[in-house]
Length: 67
View 1 (cartoon, one colour):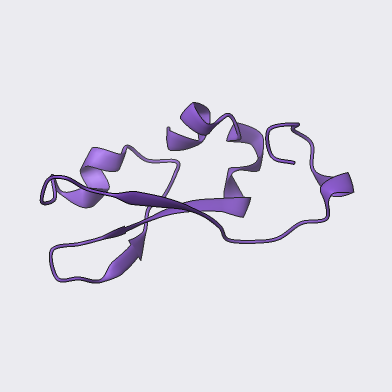
View 2 (cartoon, one colour; view 1 turned 90 degrees about the vertical axis):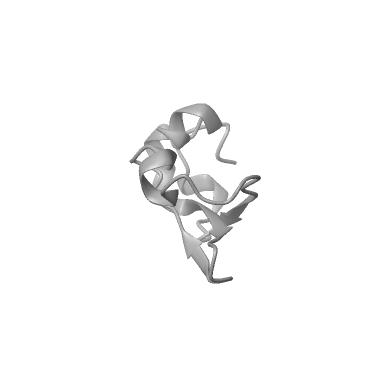
């Protein structure tokens, strides 16, 4: 779901969103699932950080948005 919004649906595994839960732990979201289910509603406002999980040489990437 979040991958579609970012325009990287085919290469979603290379990216991730992290957020901090109520206990202060940093957690990765599963980008293939709705965010609301994973954060449990959370404490507003939730802040997400887009992170690269795996670096891939640009010539191996399929989507222009991923490069």
